[in-house]
Length: 307
Image 1 (spheres, rainbow, N blue to C red):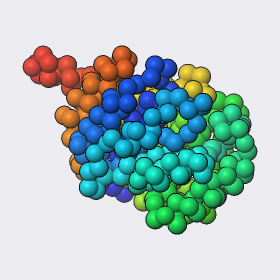
Image 2: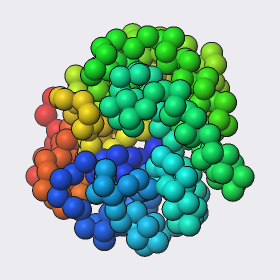
Image 3: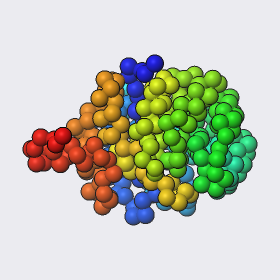
Image 4: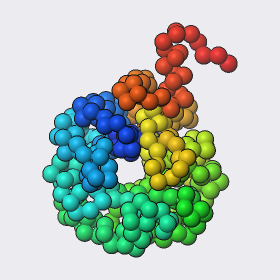
């Protein structure tokens, strides 16, 4: 049941950078998006049209979207929480907009200051406007495996939100382990349940590596036939509302896994290694990709890998 081909949604330029305290230069963001697309990533989250008051790192979204190259066959996605954000996305000629809710009531209140039901209602006009404009619409469900505030999140709660977001007309739905608490067994259960109410081929897995389970969870999701995954080059990112939540799973690590399984991604791992090194140096943070660091060290030393 493991798919022969997987699409990777690269979230480093948006989810990965949005919580950096020091402002990342706009030109660095533009170069990051361009290099990721050139490496073969077919879907790159490029910016977020949210209030600069809440996410100052994304204040240059319009300039970033105006400055990037547009490679044919690549989707450039942006986060849009409301109609004002949608208008920015439309003007920037984004290919896809992303709306985001949660499977946890407590997290919904902390993250977007409203209940799950209220968040869905807020997204209705955004979703309609996107469809009217002929844009792709993606819905992301946070805390599908656990919440830092309420603890356990039931599979029934996840399925309920999948149904609600499906009704908005989403082309894809992301099942996100926001705090990295999921395990392979739970991943299979959640993905199987979600697949009962939404097409399996349009579900995606978004895993954080807080407990070191992300790669195992991705393999478990592959066993359930999931063929879309979100990753972040150099393992950039984390969740500011969840203490201890560490990076997104690194793109380099996932591509290394998929290459080893003989699964086609269309992504150049060598280029990814260079990009991970580039952005880590640019923002002055350690590279969180194990495969990226190992391959870079091997390249620099010229030595064969130890066994």
